[in-house]
Image 1 (tube, rainbow, N blue to C red):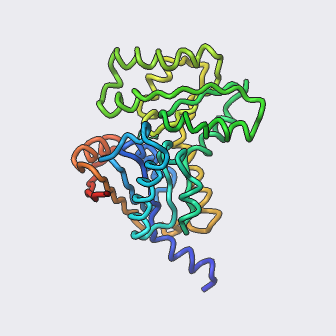
Image 2 (tube, rainbow, N blue to C red):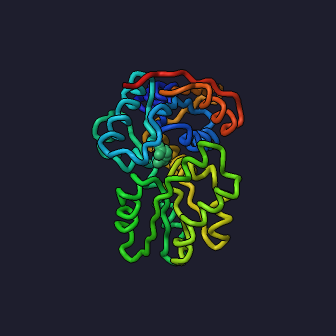
Length: 276
Ligand code: DGL
């Protein structure tokens, strides 16, 4: 059997590892499973220690490495860092340390924003950690030094999603306070630089108005996963195979299962793994 075919058969059975600080990374799982229905996924959500947004980069990197370590003991062929804060804290560190390809969520979001923006005026919203790292800005400017960028940390958005308060008048008020200053700067595209924000897309779109295109990095990273599997000859060619989805969390499986089942549109079971 040719080497390439042998390698593909071995990799076909391996899963895509996905890590996030909590449940938000399931937005990425959803997009990957829509695009790549034959691929198995192993997810780790560090629910006991989220939010990562206000933590130091060193601490977030340490936590991310603990999840990566766990995944390395499973059969995985790729690692997706679905968390913007963990990507901002050290994607390159993870890439240098891992034998599998490691993808982060920032570059796919940047590429989509560059494609979307007609005026070159782009907004980015994310956690305090992501915005303070300036990773989105750096990557956007690397591509085009003439872009106008407006960024804003929106820490309360994560709490609104986690506490199921997105459809309340208070949420709208908070969203207007965060987003009005960006809209006033005439942006035409807004990067949702946090796993939780796609879950409040409708509210954000309502506040920024129809002239601003929202960039959802979950869709973009799924496309990058597909392209990388194809390029590296790691995609699952077995049509007959039913993919396996396994979910691990550091906190309570019950609340993760509840939110996750709603988000993915089917019952999921999660297992607790204590990270310390
Ligand atoms: N997953 C995080 C991110 O995308 C959001 C929640 C947190 O602060 O941990 O930045």
